[in-house]
Image (cartoon, rainbow, N blue to C red):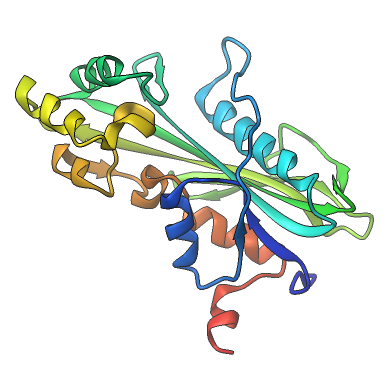
Length: 237
């Protein structure tokens, strides 16, 4: 494993939730929000969508750094065949929550790490789809893989995703309206936040709680190790 100690760690996000989660690993990092377009081709599968957007965010921020590791992440809520992003307004938030109440939905969260040098993502591309030898699984919760590597075989671009199931308890019309009045749903995929008062809407979560919050720490930890960063080593110094 090669060392990335001299590389700056950058979180390509303005999300206070992702910042808080990454701080939990006791790593030194800075935040640099990505302004990339988040549109994807029609028919893109949810797992491909979150990986694509996480990678796009990380790559866009990499252009601002000469030597760094950039972390990108993206989360979507999927109900049936419908992808629920951030609501456009309170009416849209109500529509989303009315669909989710009393039912189960899926939460997909993608994460990518890109090594930057001289304002560019570096590394030689390898199998984009990943082979059974290249994909590393974390039980039934998630997976990650190397997309490109340096000439000496070290990973330079990695991407992965997790899948969680969330079940809402039945909600009254009044509960939905009162929750929307808090303002919490308006900047969150699916119009709810599991880490805030929105937690009272949820009956159960099957999968990774932190992925539902917006950053899959389980996958990210394993990916960081591939880049030579171990939070446990940092904590002992």
